[in-house]
Length: 372
Length: 249
Image 1 (spheres, rainbow over the protein chains, first blue to last red):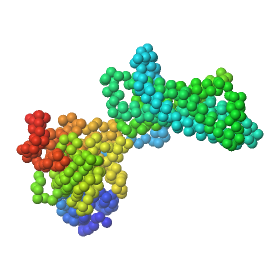
Image 2: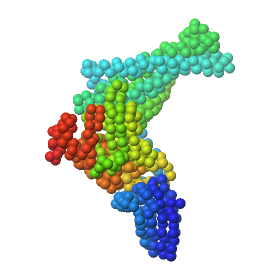
Image 3: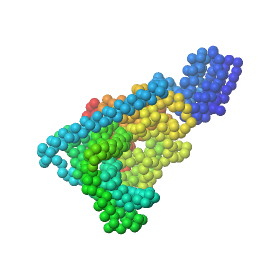
């Protein structure tokens, strides 16, 4: 108990003692609120045993005193030391504010409102992305009319960063996926006595879909996020504004080299991914199915035509454009704080993978319609 | 304000700091007294902020002692408050939540009391009530500093450390901030340690100024006394062109 209560006929004396601080405030508030009072009663808070109080205790005391006074009681403070008196006066002077209440809406309406707001945001985001694409195309056409204005050094740096340095991870992942397709495919195809078609399965899926799709996902995670982080932190540091004042166009300097690099490097990476995937599959077939490399190549030639390869590679530059656009666009959107940078980086990766897969589906429909 | 017979609140003795082979402090000593506003000045790279961080226990010195003359004899997190240069507010939280962070960490404080306390601190530092529900990125630089100070005051500290409190504020905003610091010291009996480059602020609020040069505190005295000091760096600092302008104002 923090308070001792002494009750005489008309007067209630509340005694407090010790060094009281914020840790005691909640308990003190509860004890004070539990004291039974009648209107017109006299209350005295005796502080002669109090060594020190902090603003939390002062606030609790003051609030309770006002509450009692509004119930018609007479409240007085007695024998508080200088420190306690000072801080209570200070708190009194500064407790005009109430926390402005947060607007609480009925839950059903707020769910609907949230859905509406989110939908509007998504639509806005995509229209802005389309507008941004238009801007990039405009700058690209201008740059093509004056090819000397194309920035070659950053382009080469990006080719190295996006392409060459990604070889290890792209190669490893497609190699493993190739191995897994053969392993799994052989297991199920053998049950119907069709294990010879494992090679067909591998070569068609790898060339048409997996090679390029895996490359795109890796590049989106690896380079798309890097674009957003780089451009976004430049945006936070006002470097983009500085560029504009120095007469440089940030699209020319930052966005075009990145997107061009992706367009150039994605087909090469996809080709390399196809090779590594086939290699992984061929090795697995050799080891587990005892299909010799020669037999594999024979079967491979029967299974695929060159169009399967083109179907995969043709998609590569378009996926590259998607990844580059959404990575750079999200970077340009960063405003305010480092937290926003993280938000936009996440969004750029999710958005570019989403766009790549939607586009892949569109390509699939077109190729089916064209019977390729 | 201070008489030197008083025991200091914090005393720094024989402090050595080095980063690799680069020596920052060598045998540095400094006392901080109860209820004073101590300014720390020095050229770039003389280790003002480093000294501040060592006092706060954020950097361990190479050698030397920093003693807190309180019951525990060491740094007690609830008795200090720190205002970092740009406020260092948690960007994901609103101002109200930022102020309540130390209370939540301690635990056992009722929600409505925390809200009342946050409102109190917001009013103390002179922010408008609506600022409570804003996030740091929605505030101006000056308001962020005030919000940072409100968070520093959240647990009623005895000592407040301010790292360049008026840097980046316009002269009016800086003067208001100086007044706020003075008022808080007078009302709450706070001890204030501030690293600053702002001469106006030194003249307005500090009781003593510690000058860092030659890897040491070469003088710690009131501005009036320092003006009479003949050390070349101190002379240059207090009698330079900018300082004369600031006195004329």
